[in-house]
Amino acid sequence: MKILFTALLVLYSCMSRAQVTYEDALASLARGVAERLVGTPADNVLVGSFKRIDGNACELGSTLTLDLEAALVNTPKEFRLLDRQNLQAMAEEHKLEMNGMMDEEQIMREAGKLLKADAMIFGYYTLTNDQLVLRVKAVDVQTSEQLTVLTANCIPAKIIKDLCANTPTAARPVESVTRSVEPFKRPTEPVQPPCADRTIGSYCMQNNGKVDLSLQAKFPVPYNPPRLEALVVRPGRTECFNDKPVGAYDYTLYEVYPRNPVYPVKNTERVAQGSIRIEGCATGRMTYP
Image 1 (cartoon, rainbow, N blue to C red):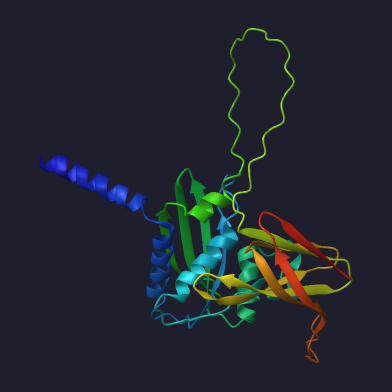
Image 2: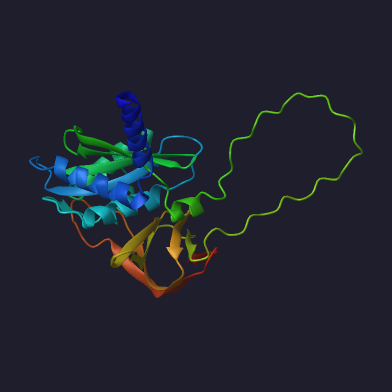
């Protein structure tokens, strides 16, 4: 009887862990990071980005990064959480790619140094059946020392399921069987799945000029004030604001010139203002000039 009771207790414990919600998992990771960084030199902390660690899950990096940042904002902590909106722009502006000699995490750490961060938080994820596996680590930007590593398994939230609803799955191997010959049938066109979420859309900027562009707009963030986001577009490139709530948003467009290290001056010039509209399940477009 004692052995049976112990086995049932272990089974219940495993089932309980498997039923952790997405929100609870992020809150637990945020608390864990805050607790592990107590007593470290990390006074200013910056959230990097989530990266997929398998080839089958859909792209969730931006959603997971913003949700972890929101969880950290609402968690008691002894460090200052820096705004990451200029992180990618800083990396591109200072040409931190170095001809492929640095991986993405190294690039973000170098950009974090420019934003005066002491530590950065990076995340990794994989989605397997109905389980979302999350792993976060805090890294000292000066020494590259790992300050903490935490993991959490949870049930994907509805927004995660919606984002992954149309992700193609791996093809199954063809079984070798003997079948009777049937008359030729014309293949039918596959039925396109409906849009997963009509409350979000995208907006893209195409740069036809000769200098970098920065398209800036404020978008709503759950439980927080609207966040200013900057879309940096190189000449001849197109970049997009992805998965933004439906609505109209004011924007400002700047031309961005290389900084002069000898004579530091303002290197941006406002060239346009207006309003962009995000339509559900659609992608708006803008070109300049």
